[in-house]
Image (cartoon, rainbow, N blue to C red; front, side):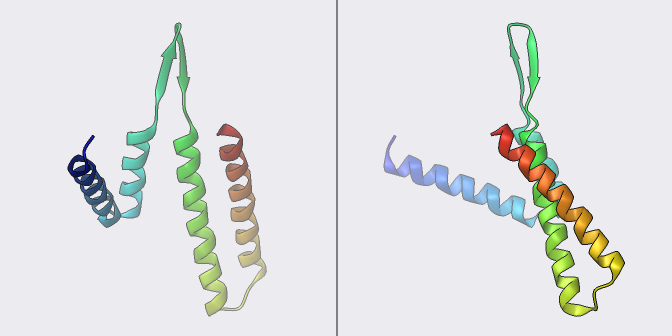
Length: 103
C-alpha cells in the first residue's frame, strides 16, 4: 500500500468521524451500535456480541456522572442528589466491569 492511498484512507476516516461528531448524541450512538454489533454463526451456533452495547451504556453513564458533577458546582447537594449519583455510579461500575470481562 502506498503513502497516497494511506493518506486518502486517513482522510476518509477523519471525514466520517467529523460527520458523526456533528450528529445529535443518540443518533451518534445508534449509528455506532448498528456499525459494530456482530452476529457470528459458527457450526450452527449464533453468537451475539454485546460489547458495543456495553460500551455505549458506559459512555452514557459517564456523561450522566459528568452532568451530576456540574450540578454540584452550581447548587447545594441534597439527599436526592446523592442518591441519584450513587445509583448512576453503581450502574457505571457494574457495566464497566461487564465490559472489562467481555474483552
